Length: 396
Image 1 (cartoon, one colour):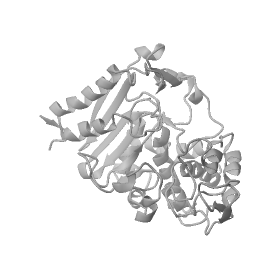
Image 2: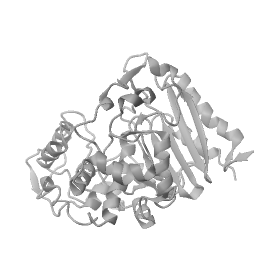
Image 3: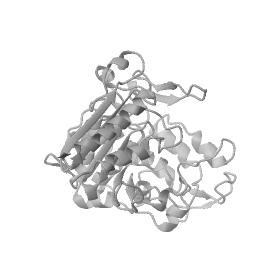
């Protein structure tokens, strides 16, 4: 029997997959939300933690989890609200608001010494930040092997202003616009939004995105009264037992407001909250009668902005950009290589095993939530099976 565009019989495979990963102790619990043709299907299994009070609390759509890099699409959407009211312009240099990034230098050799530089050929723009082409970001390298990688990895986040000062004192890895680089751009966008609005980044997000969408649990920290709904995050150890180790608990890093509200991955949220955001984009920028973005903004955000040359030299996972491009703060599927996602699907995963994608061709939204650090492999061992389980269940 088909229910909301899915086979009820085949949807069982989604739940079976989640339960296998709970039973294997990959995670204590997981939630999958599938929306097709306007009907919501939820699979939740397991608990918030392996130990303590959370071990008796079932995972649910209101479980609070660390989003990791699923923060990035929300940041991009917030930036686009500032473009729409003409506070910011996509192709203007960011120097006025981020003077620390004015007159940047660029490494002559991306693997070479930090003092072997040339002048940047042009300023960094907001479009560069949203499309990840500003010239700096994550540099995969072993410690001690690449000077700029070590310097970037050593940057902590004491405050937005101090972090930006330190980042601006380093050369860019590549010329602005030359190639796509991951991560740093989203954090810079958050600082830009804060300075453009004259308020904290968190307050700007709340005013421009969260309040209009009616979401209550999306923030940079978890209030004490909500700790009982906050799932524990795990990593795996390096021993033969490969037992899960606590990476962050309910009273850990997110229990207090941070000095630096990171656009790269600092938000916590719930599957319910993120569904409101995903639904707004899927509907062209509005949710429950409240317009957050215009339809043209959503179209722009969810289009591939990278050239073949930029993809070819990205340095990201080998072969990744063969079937994927980059919009504003999220990936865009350009070729169909498995059962799903379809061409035109957009979204992004996060460090602790969260993921969100909208597939317009199938009228499908998928949100997946668990709290298990991916340890450098953002695909995680179960992702291919999960997307296969979701797409094989389509029936209409």
